[in-house]
Image (cartoon, rainbow, N blue to C red; front, side, top):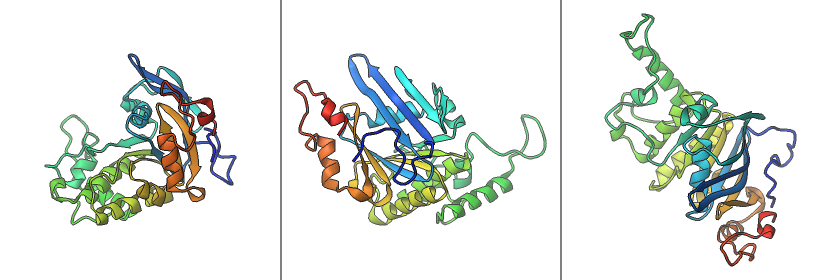
Length: 277
């Protein structure tokens, strides 16, 4: 186990993280949501971000995605320091987030959902240019095939799709936008066994495509199936990092609850020993 924030995956210490955060802090009034958090994910890697409710996972993800502006700390993309103050900044840097609600329009088909707000237009210039429906459909089919996503038709209305298919469409949307880092917030929540399998396979394909993937999940079984490393948050701090092949769910649960360290202070903070375990 290690809590070094800038250590590369085993056997590849020369790589630069696709995304790296250093000493990120964020407070909401008197509530300190994040305390000097380091975080990193590499291209071609899946990182699981876990922790109990209130651990700081959502705040960290919203900071990366531009919803929250950190009070202090630095963010780097491919080794270059960047400033993210709004979601558009994150998107421009190739960081895409798929939230639990998926942000899909049920009354539109798959093609129009993927291109919503970024429609391809024909050769005619001007504000009334017709949409290039054939090109949008062709590219949609290409992306879904690339991810091995199976749906009845790209012209199926999203409301008619299963939960797993809807999640796949939301992820395909990030690929269409040339994402380099994909953040998935509880991607298997409320899905059945078959649909969960579909989404986990999709995450593996994102890794094979060379993307950096962050999975926020309470389901440790899913985490252990698809991630390479797991980072544990507790009370606004990063308290532990595990190579998924060299740990157990029990160890991770122990870090989430504080039992792994046995040194939670009286005021609810995590001791220095826990931070450096």
